[in-house]
Length: 419
Image 1: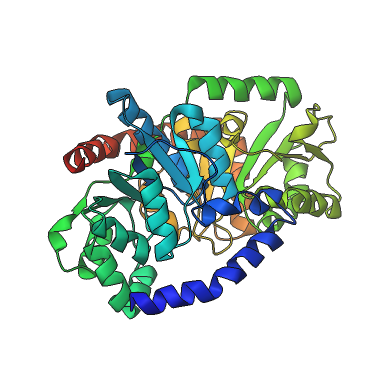
Image 2: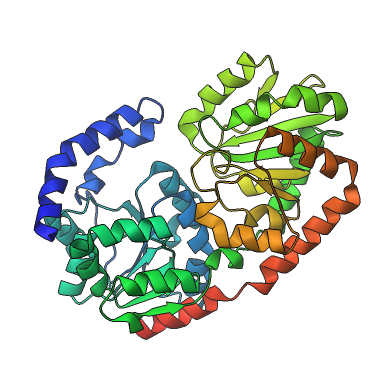
């Protein structure tokens, strides 16, 4: 089955590069560093690395505290972080700098993967969440490289999909040394796909162990004081296509009841910045772009964050947060960041990627879930009119996060047993 999978990968390879080229019209970074995707390197790199693969921004952000603690305990370690997206790549460089090496993960073709392994000679491979690459997993085992999946999650729909190609996924997972899952449900699904079920253990979600520097929060408050003082700031974070409409069309009605309301919109993908600006203008809303560095006059309706890597700081500039990817069928994004920073959290119904966390926040009375515009409007009005209620949500959110921390310590212990 892996041979068929490899043949298909070879056949679609030209189309993958065509896709990168087309995406480059909106984000030129997609047209850069293609050689890395073919495991061609034009410079020497350190070898004997611990190799972390985090596909994009969400996974990358989740492992920063883990990698930093690992380096603090063993500063002599050589760390490689791979991603597959330019935005994930940008975050690695911005946050970790020269502390780690970074390249794109090559496509999952045996010759490319083997060249990648020969070039970096990993002593341990760490895959974040649910990235199952049949050839990478096989070649790690063949080259005696322990491989572990951390913060692993497997939804019911993904599990059913992997079951249908069990002839491919079961041998791949049997090459894994250990799987550290977020929940017992995840563990049960992974175990059902494997021969040796003892390799699976529940460790928890490392996203709870995030820490936000007081400096970020202070920068957010400073930005607010400088650019939009005396406004009630509602940040709509990590939005996707068709999602901004929910808020832009609701805004004029809310403005009548919240005269000082300001929408702070942070699109998930940088290639959508211009599109969202046009959408705001189509709705006759006055927009100020983050990169303009201009203050927001009284008639400003939307402050559009056309930058990457500033979300935590911008949360610090807001009164209330709505986390996107949840009003359209994307699966949601990290709702813990605003909770840790100390602002009330709202999200929509599409939270499959964060279901356990979302359910936990709701059970702890630490967040609000909205199904439609009417519920969103009612929720934001209640939060605006009741400052004490906002404070209760914030306090409950911080308690919920603290009660679920500790996964990083357990994962560090696991990694030490494999190196």
